[in-house]
Image (cartoon, rainbow, N blue to C red; front, side):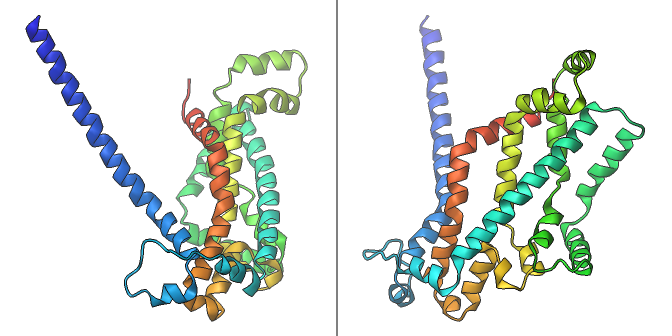
Length: 288
């Protein structure tokens, strides 16, 4: 009996030590991950004079100011860029959702000649470097005279091989018996998709929508390439414009204020839907 108690106490002590080490490691890792966000926020509330006077960067400020946010929204039309980004994000996400849902349904439920071969070739597109795709899209959009238009911004982003694959895997988890029963009852494919598959796959679809919104909001390379008219600039262009305006190249606090303003909507979106994202990804990657 005494030996059993000793073994139990030793095991419990090792377990506590193990969990303590894990928690310490995760805490240190969390600080390292969050520190850039803290530094970004801190820099955005430091006055320009205080920031430039620091020979050694200070990790706090006793006189925070919101003037940098005023500068960020007045020196460039950042509010208009927010509206452009919102339009770009909403339309792109809506069109992409239509495309990937229909494509995923076709690959998951419909039977047609060469389906597996076509899907394999489709997946092989993921191996093409993004730089090559950007060049091809740039040449195509330029030849179609769609530069400096919302159509030129949106069209290259209305599909995603990865999202189609993720949604197809989720659709295939739905029993075939439901589809066969629906066909016996005379239900059309579109009605079955709308009434059965989409509601069942809602977590994955919500995840795809959120990830696409984040992708569009953070889009930088493509808007920089395809637009030089400020009427079509996105927030990513606005941040770069602040930096290139002369005042922004040296006024880092104003630039950080713009970055904070751009980041807040995405942070709030992620915090609200983080459970949906985790649920959707886990369901999309599990079969059975």
